[in-house]
Image (cartoon, rainbow, N blue to C red; front, side):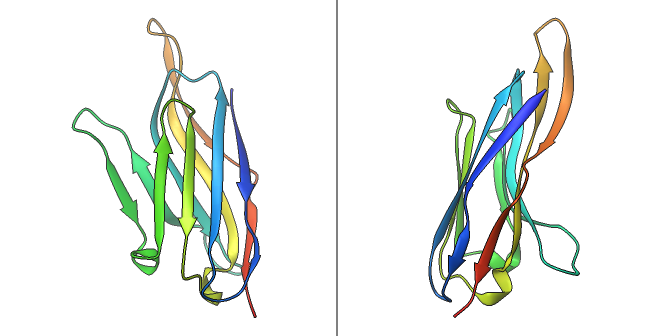
Amino acid sequence: QVQLVESGGGLVQPGGSLRLSCTASGSIFSINAMGWYRQAPGKQRELVAEVTSGTSGGSTNYADSVKGRFAISRDGAKNTVTLQMNSLKPDDTAVYYCNVRGDSGSSNYRYSFDSWGQGTQVTVSS
């Protein structure tokens, strides 16, 4: 079982910045992707940013609405993913969820996992 612990979030004025962090622990053999999703009231959950691992080096993906304002980074040694959010707008208000996907087990027996954090509220308002 893989557990995620999120930190950060809160209330900030438009134009301000916040940093979200998420650390994964438990039965982790490898991590394929770490990212952040958000869900605003009355809307579907959407991808904000994600960093993936792969034999070709992996990739970083952002929602169009946050490109140039948000930056995602991953610390592989600590199984931590951080989302730096700058120039925040009221439309960024939502509950932000950390998501981590990968494999648990050992080299002899592996099974996939897809874990979610409990969510952290981000409110952008004057």
